[in-house]
Image 1 (tube, rainbow, N blue to C red):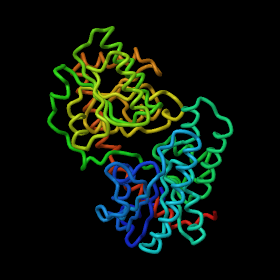
Image 2 (image 1 turned 90 degrees about the vertical axis):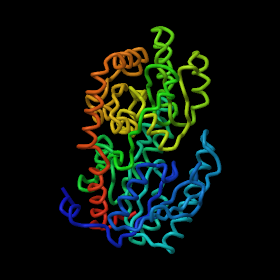
Image 3 (image 1 turned 45 degrees about the vertical axis):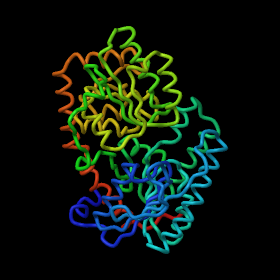
Length: 411
């Protein structure tokens, strides 16, 4: 494989990198922050452009030796016109800050993290100056649109066009898993030598298994945990229907559910939870500090991932699955390709979008402590042997070495 020998012996000493991420601020975007720290450790000078967010309000600061430049966004987009306003404002700020960083720190490579597939517009003038462009493919936006709206149409075709242009402009593509790699090779028509798989494995040196906190169980015997975004595609409504089945139809009043995270649907989900008569059994924590997250995962008996089965979720690796495995937790999820690849036998797989079967799998695990331990131990061992962040860093460095060795692709 290209760069294997270089990865072992080489470094990125004196290289200068600009990373651009639009949908989350650093350091809260764990993948981007892990990549930035790995590039820094390899000797590169790293700058990042990202939006402001709660707990990340400073417009300019240096964190762990990484230059962070944040910009405001006008609205939290919900409709088409608001998305246009948000993306337009983001592109303006990203372009403005990119020129500022070029003159202040310099950079040789732009590392763009989608969504959206529009950051090529920021990169184009710099490619004319000979800068390399690396596309870090986090989300497959055509599939996301189809899953969200249940149709294709003109906007879907436009998203496909933006994705294709991004692939076309990229000197190197970083894929988060093999499904995304196949998309880069087929839809993106990239050469195999220009596509590198860098999985979003957790950094085990920064995770801490804590003593369980019995208070999270609110006097009940078991705790089932969920960590992640709360949007339409995450299937939290299906999870709540599973909880209703367990509590009201199976009489399982010995289980507490803790849902960690936030998102555009959290308000609706709380109302739905109340309408199902589940407020006493479900705790919504919102976004929490890492210390609280680690405590929840350390306390949980079972962790769940109710992501709906659709082309987007089928091809995407969910960070929460890997985090559950890092804490040695058995998992219940619906059967999707990348979820099964990641967890393997650390998870039980319910029938697609079937909340009753999902509830049955949770109940079975809670009744079988020996199997919970076997599954949890397997998941943690698999992560430590194959999927942890330390195993991804060589491919990340190899992608940068490939970009440097390749003549810049004409915009």
